Amino acid sequence: MLFLLQGVVASILSILLAMAVWWRWIHLLFPVAVLLMLQWQLPAWIYLLAFCFTLAVFWSTYRTQVPFYPSLPATWRQVKALVPADRKVSVLDIGSGTGGLVLYLARERLNASCAGVELAPLPWLVSVLLTYLKKSPVSFKYGDYQAVNLSEYDVVFAYLSPAAMPDVWRKAKKEMQAGSLLISYEFEIPGVVPKLQIQDRPGAPSIFVWEL
Image 1 (cartoon, one colour):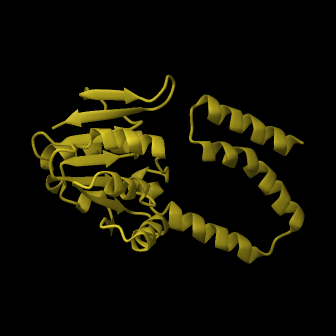
Image 2 (image 1 turned 30 degrees about the vertical axis):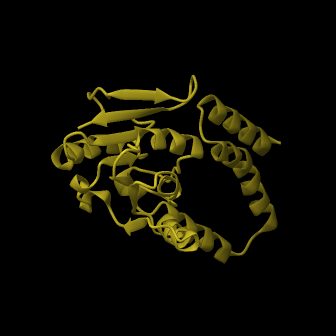
């Protein structure tokens, strides 16, 4: 009963904090899953497999301080509205995860050349497989966004973490062209006023837009 109560409380807190729906289910079910695994006395290799899976998803979180948080379709639609539709543009998603935003923009903005860069092996591999299956013209690079030349892109999107934003801003100022857009979902750049702040609904995370 205590395990279930812990899950319910955690799930309610995630709702109050406007976290993604899938986090609510994780918080609700995780304590119950722990209890079941203790009762089932699972073999050790199961835990090793779970560790390897977690490592493949959260590969460099300890260094980048950026966990795996995929953006949702509601965010994709807001980003699409910010991408110019009257000319050829290049769009980059730094920390592209499984590629949802990039694949969506390539489908909805035919004038846009879309790419992503991802440091975690498993999400990157999923994005490459989805690109192949969907026969999409997008590209996904495996690696750190710091190794990418941002001057090649008109729009750069980031859904990272508060700790990463100062470095993102320094790189954007150094490399991005005048008039290009830096878009961040949920996280602001300390001390830098955005040109736009868009909120889908009261209490929901904002999208911040800076024009270089």
